[in-house]
Length: 115
Image (cartoon, rainbow, N blue to C red; front, side, top):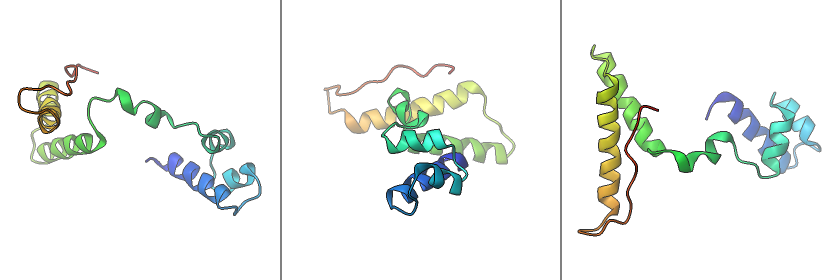
């Protein structure tokens, strides 16, 4: 979670815990946008949360991919796009293998593209 989202969530939590009488005061106390805090209190999801279903990799898989790229870069080998895509596909295939049964495909995902 980035810094702005952390401040927004802190303002929401403080308001819901009745530490502040108004949403505006809670937002100002945490230097968070008032409108965003109001939306979150009323149930609107963040942009990241609302698009999670569109992601091809889970957050854990993305973190693993970042860790792998960082390690390769640290030893002087920055992987190209095709190698990163290959690794992402392998992470995705491992998840699919753990879900699908022998001979029965319960889940499948589209191929990973450039975006």
